[in-house]
Length: 319
Image (tube, rainbow, N blue to C red):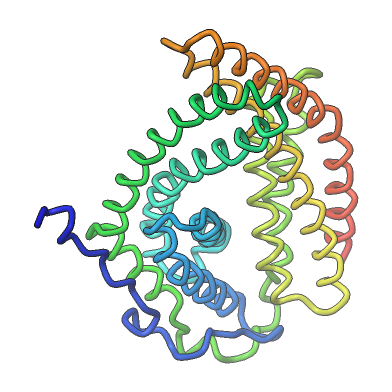
């Protein structure tokens, strides 16, 4: 029997193994801000653990996607409000960035491969075999990236990271009381990521470079995650305003995400043409043309969505 045949998938870490309670943590509207941060970490850590087995197996790309979303939300929360839960928040945030990188490498290939298969399916039947040969190159690269990911998920660094998040998620005794008078609400935290996004938009030239639009998407994502946390502690009227802001930022992510996917797909396809046969080269040209059109569509609509964010953010700030 080979070593490959005897290798076993590690047992997934459970919430109980990390000392988490049977039920997810909750924080009421009047709880201190730190309690809301800890509850959010508890929720996202459970989601990350639930998605880990599927991420390891690679059976459903959605598991990896949702694991990465949980990682990003925790990292964003610690960036915005980590000081509320102690000095160990920053090292944990740094290691969440490392985890995001190894998850992102595979996720990028999942998105690329899925998208290219959809595009190729719209081509004439005679062109589809060459398209599949092109995609097979990316499938091989994804396999290599997945091996790196599974090694990372079996590493001591990952195990230590899980313990660190769990420790931060545990509610301190003084946080079970109501919010002290005069303590700033989490809604105030939304202003900082909004200002960063606003300044980044204002600094753009009339025809922004692709990398600058990708940076806007990242700023928008941080604003959305901060608004989601703020909504958990908001009263009804403010929560409704934050919901509108979250909807606008989600649409912003979608438009600029389509733009970035098109940019990366065109680049990857061009880079994969070394040694390609004429049929594959022809199909690659059609794909790149499709992605250029998709990029142009996103560029024509993103600014309109930005104005929706501006309007929603001003409504939140008025309270």
